[in-house]
Length: 353
Ligand SMILES: Nc1nc2c(ncn2[C@@H]2O[C@H](COP(=O)(O)OP(=O)(O)OP(=O)(O)O)[C@@H](O)[C@H]2O)c(=O)[nH]1
Ligand SMILES: [Zn+2]
Image 1 (tube, rainbow, N blue to C red):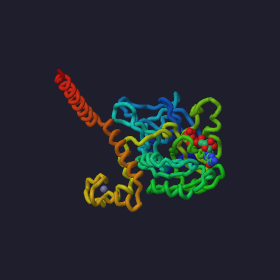
Image 2: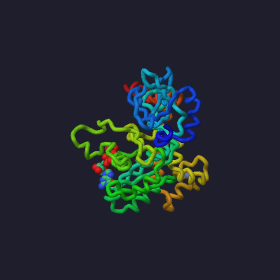
Image 3: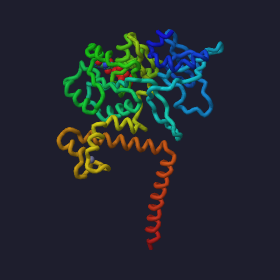
């Protein structure tokens, strides 16, 4: 069983973590898909359906997610997930609700593959968002420039992307011709999750790596049946071992509460800022600003500084939304301001003859 599990990413550390569960007669499995309280779990030779035994008051983020390793109670009446093993990494999305909790989109991902299509000019701001999500998860980002067969100038595109992705490996490839696919296989982690905008070539990559049609690509979907309607697998075991995670939720993920991720994504700017004369420099007009200096001498683009600021604002906004105290303070400030405005209007009106 262990051999079958290791093809899914099971290793000696998971084994020792699991020892106490094994003593209780529980069996390990990996969550392949979550569907409204029911979980598809993989044991290496079978895909089974299990129920979750979730105690009252459990946070959403503690419930089993795709990629989780779980302990299964195999009862005659059916399988029940009793525990989620502590996660090594997690890709989270803050929930739309008011409670301060997030939803785990994927767990135990060591490589976050970000697909960027070469057939159109790369939207660097979008890429930088995905990079922040990747760093925040605790996994290692891997940027893949897809459709190299239709690109004019791969080198220039690659340089532009590398500048926006410090600390990440950037590979160009074509699923069509197979060029660069070997390098990709070598760079994949044990568990790789896929991010990337629509049409980036993610499904095509998954199918190529899996060696079979596991995901519906855009072409096959042009049958009037709409997109993402086919029930495709979300955790795919690869022929050479290791797994890919590709879920609809991951495809639409945003930056949200990822302040550590932003710092890592923009490590070049954060490093520069340490050399600014003032500790609270906002890199506008301050003298001795190392960030402006880097822009002046061409080491940093204005575009990237703006992108950094935008993400910081988004994180701050999300943080306020998720922090009741901060939200209340913000609401009060607004109330005061609108009241002051009303007062102003009233005074003016009463001033009228
Ligand atoms: N020329 C060329 N076309 C490719 C390559 N990879 C993917 N495509 C095409 O790009 C289009 C989009 O590919 P998909 O794999 O469906 O992209 P996706 O990222 O899964 O898209 P969504 O499902 O919308 O998120 C399809 O028409 C593919 O045939 C490639 O290496 N070369
Ligand atoms: Zn500065």
